[in-house]
Image (cartoon, rainbow, N blue to C red; front, side, top):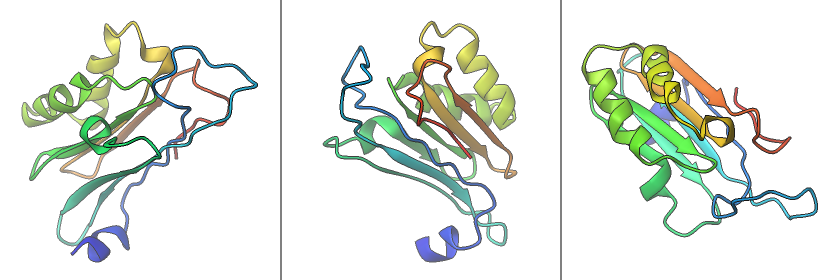
Length: 139
């Protein structure tokens, strides 16, 4: 099932961030990359979110999903509330972009965060804060 979900990606996201435990990034610090992906199978509507990192148990902080609602990936100085709050916003009828806009609106840490939201219609919204490391980005 996962293979069928990942092969015909409707939307995907690749995020790269430094070690989330660091509060200050220095150009001389080694980078510790984390990669996340959100995906939806256009034929079945199945959605998934996945993360890869060297951080132990990172999946409990980064990846969030609810069947029939959507998926959320939040990393780079992760705001765990974005997972449950993002899903609640999607469940209330907001689009991925509307949910993301609402999450970031009052977030003082938005400049160091990365977030991707995929809703059950296949709409994607992404954010990479302007103070994330140079190699951080989304696609």
